Image (tube, rainbow, N blue to C red):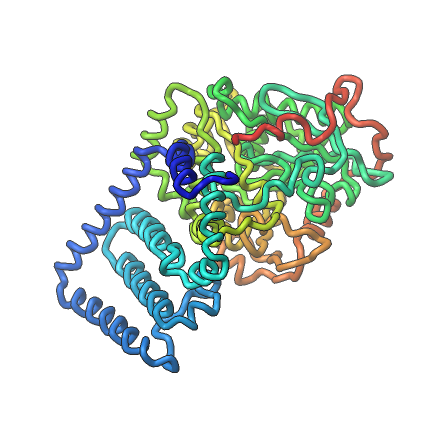
Length: 573
């Protein structure tokens, strides 16, 4: 980048520009635009059928805009509108100090409220309204005056003070991100797996085409004779549960006297594209269970799972139960969907048309690129996960600060075509998993009612990927003794809430059997981390203390390489 003129940098950026969005389907973007336009055509056409209401809403909107215009010349006037709580785009004092930019801000907020209210008041059916609302908010977020240099007073101030160096540095940042094919959310140079992330000592003691099994070194003199097997999502890497020492869930489990194993799923390439959900059980979880039992000599093990890893665990338990095998003493599910009837905003990407498109696109096999999945999840929180970085990285020319969770979030993994398309249709689209016997896996019908071991469900209040009220319906499906816990925050921060920091709060002991709302009304709010609560629950499930193993693995499962292992190191960059 050094010694290049702005023109040379622009030419290089243009040459490389296709990399940024190479994994985003043109068909999908056209589908999104078409649905947005068609929905708004319907809204406006139906509004014309009731012209009095339309005139009233338009008149009210223009009255607010007129009042805002008049206020522009009166610095002491009360604001016509204010940003929503938590909206950090306009928090800098420059937005208040500049009358012009204060006007732009409030005009934008008024227009945004009017558009979203029109969608809310429309007579569209629920599914169409949800999609229209989602795509309208995407449009609104993209059009924010904070996203453009000339309409953002913070950027203008930075440009004047730095004599334009922020824009030059921002262009360099943009070119680097184009090369990577994604927006940088953290200073990635600050992290290295095995050095300051995923540092808990251990060894890979088994591996196959699909996964490596990591056995961690015990941290106590004695351990529960029922080892813990952690099944993370296969659409992310396991080390979200083993970040830095101060927020490692794996380390916490070890410190509480457990013998801990974790599955490190392989980041699949095109050669593994035909691997199915059956394979992830038959060649994944079942061999891992057998290895853990063989290494430890345990008759029963405790399973812990997260997100789609929990869905894989639930189907594994049901498959084994159908074969009269019950290796689990307990099962823990973090933010896991078993009933997919209401997947929240992810539902806007899932209907018959869009699933057909994915099936057609992936019918030759291969993989769904991890960057495409990451982009979809980022769109659910576009202001936080897209536009804030566009402004900071490219307009202000800043390098984002180091943040371990965001480093992990950018370390995307692919998903095999066969598994992904089956998952979309059978679970999200047709919601068959909740129906006893509606799907067959590994040659047997799946019935989640066969899950009769003690179960711990952990959901998160602000989860936008696995909405907690939808995850709650699983409490009516499984048959074992049950503990449902609701953590504060979202899909990641709701789970990674270290006991040492003891932040936020969680809810427990609500009355089951009368729905999610009733459960929350009757639940008790407890300050701090839920980790100690889970640890106490796990200890109550039984097991005796035995001397901690002096070696990792066993004769039949020797140490292959040190943790975190080779599979987790494979990146999509």
